[in-house]
Image (cartoon, rainbow over all chains, first blue to last red; front, side, top):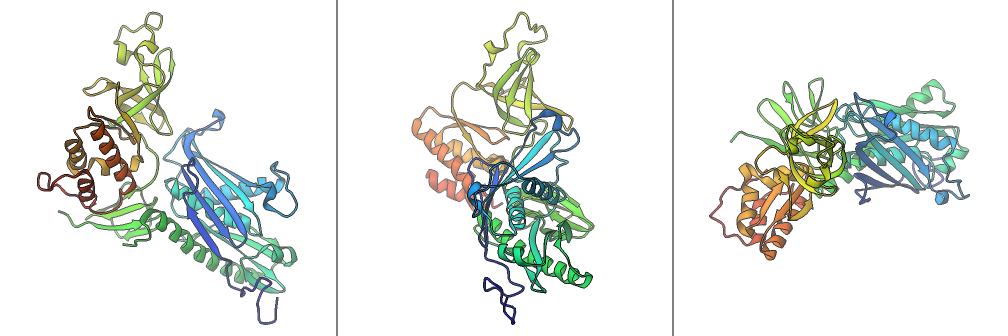
Amino acid sequence: MTEDGIRCDGRRLDELRNISIKVGVLKNADGSAYIEFGKNKILAGVFGPRDVHPKHMANPDSGILRCRYHMSPFSVTERKNPAPSRREIEISKVIKEALQPAVILKDYPRTVIDVFIEVLQADGGSRCAALDAAAVALADAGIPMRDLVSACAAGKVADRIVLDVNNEEDQEGQADMPVALMPNLGKVTLLQLDGMLKPEEFKTCMQTALVGCKRVYEIQRKALMEKYFQNGEQ
Amino acid sequence: MMDVKRRYVIPGDVIATGPLRPEQNVFQDGDRMISTCVGISEIFENSVKVIPLTGGYMPKANDLVIGKVIGTSPLSWEFDINSCFVGFLPAQDVFGRDYSPTKDELRQRLDIGDLVAVRIANFDRSRDPLLTVQDRDLGKIDSGELIEISPSKVPRLIGKRGSMIQTIEMATKAIITIGQNGWIVISCEDSEGLLKAVEAVKMIDALAHTPNLTERVKSMLGVVDGENNDTIND
């Protein structure tokens, strides 16, 4: 990072990578989205509500949410074994838990909503990008939601708090903190921290991440509006 | 007509604040009315609702739907009703009260793959929808063209007091059976009329959220205005 705060990829401290979201890219899924978050390229597909298999997982009071985050073997420089790794299982779990407060499952007893996330190309912050795509895909599938979920990471690189940590910064940096937010309700649904931050740094880091989430939300919103209303705001 | 304010919304959008009653696809957070799906919000004098633009079919008692037989058990048929739940049609409903599983063969009346117009007799959260064919216009469908549209667009296809569907039926001389689950069977003796009706239905599915749809359908069908002035703008 340079003295005046220009980062390794030319961004300012509080600048997001380029994000583009496309809604409804998979024909066979009930809802889907494709996100390019910097160099991250991620597909998310939603199936359901549908019958639960195995049947013992079904909940008679409400629907259940299942999430699978998977990285393609070619998504990273060294071939990744396609079997779910410890990291992928963890990310599947945290994404599920980040989406759960937003999705209204009460309306669909004895059913499941499956969210499949496939990382085609990874470059740091893929769990946030995956979550952004999954939230849009859920909305596309018409699953009732209290709010969208927008996620963005912030971190500490070369003793400075930066927004949206990329892979290089993640490897070299001192901390990485992914945050997911329900922007209209103002509730945080995911907060992880890898590294160490002083209490004041944590506060600024959190603030930075929340600002990032809100910016991501605008992009998610635009993507949905484009698909359904051809951007004709009324 | 009552003054209705309409707006395009996505999940999480605050539609209104104040003492209003949340109706379909609206969730209340304090005094804020929040949309739970992608759709068009409508604010009435004392209530708010959102007309969804996506999403599957949720069974409702008394709905007429078109179902496809997917299996039989000794006492009932199982129907695919384009929903997350499987519909059940008891054998007694077709054979009468003296039905006996040893004597009567279910497959002789309705075989797997048959399309049937059924009504949902009963449905609640704890049980799968119970179907019936005991009514006028219900029963096996022998001929016609099956079209699948999004269930959320069925009200638009019917139009206000059936205006849209009447327009199509009159212009093409086709008989259209609309299932609330988004499955539609069109039968017409004239092949040209059939093609036109199919085209009109598909057009409504694609352009359901745009204003002046009746006019567009009319011009597509080549109907001279004046005979049916029942235009709708919602």
